[in-house]
Every structure is written in C-alpha cells, then in structure tokens.
Amino acid sequence: MANQGPAYYSPYPAALYDGVITPPEGKALLLESVVDEETAMREVARVMLTSENATIFPGPQVLYGYNEEAKKKATLIKEMSEVLNAKMIPMYDYRPKYPKIDAEVEINPNHPNLTIWHNNIKAAIFIGVHCHYANVALKMVRCETDCYTIAICSMSGHEDAMATLRDQHSSELEKFIKIAKEVKAELGK
Amino acid sequence: MSTIKDMTDTHNWSGQRLVTADELLFEAPREKHFMTGSEVLKEAVKRCTVDASVSYPITPQSEAAHLIGELWAEGYVGVYFRGENEFGVMSEVSGCATAGARTITTTSGPGTLRAMENFPQWSGTRIACQLILMARGINSPLTIQPDNLEVTFMLETGCMIWYAENVQELFDMTIAAFIVAEKPDVHVPIVTVVDGFFVSHTRESVMLPADDIALFPYEPYKAPLPPIDSETPPGRFLRDPFVMKSNYISYATHASWQWEVRSAVERSRPYAKHFLKGLVHVTGTEDAEIAFVTCGTASNQAKEAERELIKLGVKTKVIKLRTIRPFPTEELLEALEGVKQIFVPEFNVVGWLEKEVKTALYGKSDAEIIGGPRVAGGMSMPAEAILKEVFEHIDAEKGA
Image 1 (cartoon, rainbow over the protein chains, first blue to last red):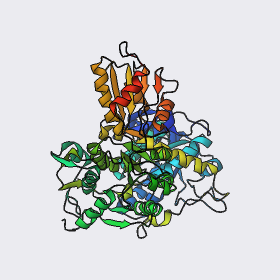
Image 2 (cartoon, rainbow over the protein chains, first blue to last red):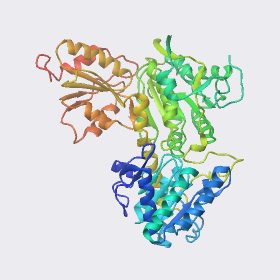
Image 3 (cartoon, rainbow over the protein chains, first blue to last red):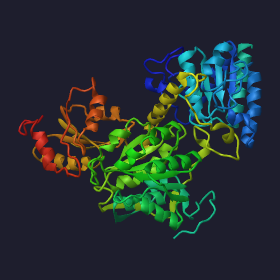
C-alpha cells in the first residue's frame, strides 16, 4: 500500500501496481517499506491504540474451532482486543448479505466499506480471513475509506493493507500481545 | 509398477520419498535420457505427487494425456479419468482442484478454444491447477501442425503462462509450475506452453533425477479460498458460488476480484525467478546491437541465426522469455540496453509476441521493433529465413 486514503478506481486500486508486493519471509510491510517484524508490530499497536474506533475483524479461520491452533488463536485474539482497546466485528462467512448487511454486527468481503463507514472505523486488523477474500476486501477498503488497514496473516501477507505481518501463528500473536502491552504502557492508554 | 500405500510424512502413496522442489530441481543427481516431450511430461508428472488428471486424449494432439493415464495405472497419479470433451475436461479439472487436488491436464489449440470459458473461471476461483498446452494452432482449416496462435487467446485469462523451449525445460518447468502456482499469495492456474510436434513429438536428450523421489503433496488448506470440504469447517460453510446477479453486491467486488487475480499473477515473479533461474535467458554478445526476443522453439532457431550473425561480425543476442504472464518487462528492458533493432520471430501469423513486446517497451526503449519472420501452419523456421529478415533491415558490413 503506497499511500493511505481513498485511491478510488482510477488508475489502479491495487498496491501491486504501485510496485508493492508481499514481504519476504521474516519481514513485514509498513506502507511500501519492508521492515523487521517487531518494528511493524510496534507501529500496528501504536496505530490501533491511537485511532478512533479501532476494530479487529476476525475471519472464519479463527471463528470456527476446527483445530487446536484455531482455538488457541481465537483466545489470543480476544486478549489482543482487550489490550488494544479494540472492538471486534466478525467476518464469519464470505457470502454476500441479502437484502442488506447489518453493518453494526458484521463485515463482509463483498462490501467491507459499509461496515467501516457505518462504524467510523479509522484502524482495523484483518485476521483469520482467507487470503483471497482479505485481498478483495482490502482493495475496496483502500479505495473507499481512509481506514488504516492491518493484515495479520498466517501465510504470505497482503500488500494492499497498510501494515502486513506474515506467517503469524499463535506464538507470533503472543509476541504481538506482549509488544502491544509495552506500547500501551508507553502511551499511557 | 508402484504399489499404492498410505501417504506418510516422508513418502507418498506410490512409495516415492518426498523432497522439496529445490532438491528435485537443483540438488538431486541426474542421468541422461533420450525422450519425446510427451514422454518427458510423463516423467515430470511422475515426480509431482499429482492427485488428479483429467484427459480428452484426442489423436493426434500428443501422447501426453495417454501417458499420464499410464501413470495412474502404475500407481503414481491418484485419480485419472476421461472427459466427454474439452469443455468437460477443463470443468472437471476445476472440480478436482477446487476440492483440494493437485491437478494437471494437457491439450492444444482446438481443445483450448472449445474449453475457453473455463480458463478465466479457473483463475477467478484461484485454483492452482496446471495445463500443459502443446501448441498446434487454431482451426479452421484443421491443423495438426506446430503453430502457437492459441497462446494469444490465453493471454488475458488471469492464468500464469510459462513457455518452454525444449524437453528439458518442459520437465523442469512442469515441476516448478506446481510449486509456484501453489504459493498462497499466487495460487492461480498455470499454463505451461510448448510448441507441439517440435517438442511434444521430437526425441531429445534430457537430464532427469531418479524417479524414487517426488514433490511434497499439495496443501489445500493454505489456499487463498477455502477448498470444498463437506466435513471440515470453515470450508463447508464458505464456498457458495460467487454470482454478480444482485443489486446487493457492490460492483466494486467484481472489480477488486479481477485486480486481485491479476495481482496474484504478478506476485509469482520472485518465485518464478528462483525456480526458472530468471524470467528471461540471454545468450550472445553482451554489447549486441540487434536482439531476437523469442519464446519456445523460435528461441532455438534464433540462436542458430545468432551464431551465423556473430560469425559475420554482427553483435547479436537472443533474449528468450520464460514467462509470458507475468510479462518480464524489467528483465527485457535490462537485456535490451544498447540494442538498436529487435526482431521477434514467431510461429503464428498474428504476431502476438511482437504485440506483447511493443506494449511492454512503448515509451521505454528507442530500439526499432521488427515483427518477424513469422511462419505458421506447420512451416519450419530455418535460420536462413531469420537471416533474410535481418538483412532486409541491416547492412551486414556496418551492423545495425
């Protein structure tokens, strides 16, 4: 993500066309810069703790207890929301919502901007969302809103988010929570 | 003949030891063999722990689909069946891959066009299947001869497209293609193209690793879309067909989805660079004034012409494109530094590669681009034909 803020649909809504791709293993992305994971974790925590209506969007991979890792992550994400003083709005499936989404209680990848507009969300973490739907949603959010998007991904990360942490499993989430607590103490939040 | 066993952490169902793509492609010892392209494809598939293959083994496309069937009979391929026609085949490939199977099929021009609707559907559903396209042109009139016109129809389907020059590249690319296509941030179909007959039916020497090793199996749960899984959540709740029929969906969804598919193809660049050892291969004179930009067997013919031109004192290079999607614009520009004239020899009448090269270089290179020579419908492209084209544009005494 080269620039924050509405990019609209002209000429290119995809960060990749600004020359940004997913970070290499062991690294993270902050806007267009490749940085160390810990640097990105600190910045993500700072943004979440200082932005209006910071929200976590947990996706199906952490909402359904289909394996032990998913259950562990879900518990950690709950703790993360408390540390970051963040709300949680789930993306529990990917089907478009008929006739209209209830933007107060859920987010959907086919129209994620509605939930962000309705709740005036200025920073958000996507976690546990399958990569394709995360990317589809992140491009739309980038186009339509000024929300600072953060992808905490168990795979290769997402260049369309403004901050990307890759290969994030429960051990990395524990590390992030520890860093977020430190940042919170520094900020006096 | 292999005996079907349970997959373990170290061995696949046919008893082959599981290895990384790096070990299979770069580290395992190799021995020399003498094989056709179709036979080499069988050898590649044998080492890829392929779950499923669907075929429409029409004669005389190639023996490849038939030989993959033999692999199934020998216990190296999980499932193998025949579609009723090419549209059916490509739809069934989609079903296998969406269900989480490492899937391969092979066809050529007429089959490609008959199945056309499936290819953007493949990329739109982010399946990581592989199509081996043994190019032989488009009917009508009926062609069973080498011609790569069908590639132009594939360019904007959202699939990755790689192009192999010979049987060795076909072997290595087929293996690398699965690995790159299956990367979670890529995960789009890959079309591995070779020129039919010149590669599929011609016997060449090829270096192969032993056949008792094979790639680790595909991991569908790393896919960017959940695989269809009727027993395990979250897959079973999530894979409703996406339909743009409704006023309740933002039109931005479809736009964003299309950008995402194309972004995924672009994300393959670093992986392809590693496994193909570069997106372009350059031979010839470092400070060349003329360059041939080629893919497939036209590269081989251009290298013949290059040798003759260098003997005549004309500084020449051949820039062989290994990937067409993503198009290696940066690498091409770098290789073209100092070049004054670019020739694009092709095995088709429309000059699709010339158009690609012109699009990529527009406003970025001052070199003159000459689309030719072009042959089609089964004609060969002797070095003399390429030299004739060159000498119509340059003075051999003075160079470009």
